[in-house]
Length: 263
Image 1 (cartoon, rainbow, N blue to C red):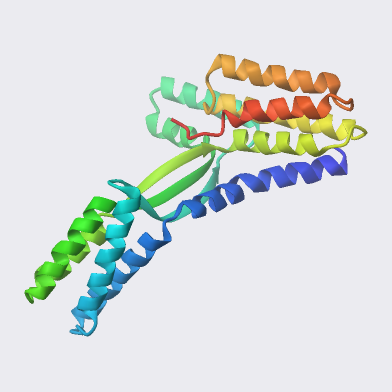
Image 2: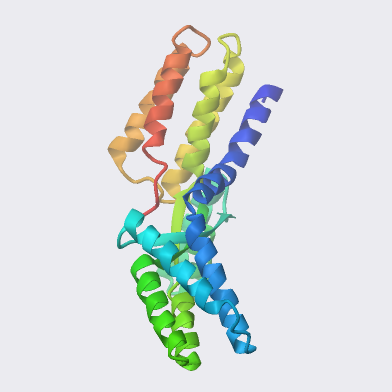
């Protein structure tokens, strides 16, 4: 493998988690993050008997939530996102072997062992997003304000804790091999015509990533698989020629359709 191809492969492997994390961070509603943080601070203050400024803070939070509700209506708002990668297997041959072992073990009735093997058959980017229902946030803050004004601090704290307890974690799984394939196709677009050897090596790796994704069950639509394979072949036929960039773009567009959440 030429040095340039090694550099491209390394970049493509690094991008799925980094690009996903940056995209998820842009979705976070910072105003909702601020509100939930302030609620936690209020609970801590009240528990030690510090009540100064609480009413003013509650009024401010109520206004902020009303504004959020005006903008986002009855929905959930992301307040925190954690992105990480799980790689149990990273090449098609190993994946095939483990898959066959898992089937054999399951047929023999050794379910715990089979479960362990199946759990290895993963190569994915996992997104865990903490979200809070906006309607719960709005109604609970208004209710908490009424309890505070009446001096009912126990119910006040219970209500604020209800808000913090309403934060849910939503898990999303993205197929890492297909993300890698997409970023590799993006790199193909940037190669010069004279870099044919590098282009062919990158195309070979895209095909390998597709094969791994098939074995792991991240892509099952036969037409979609066939369309991608045809786009890879189309690129390979003209790699190093004037049509190379156009065919690389078509391959990238086809792979973009596979980047979504695993169902």
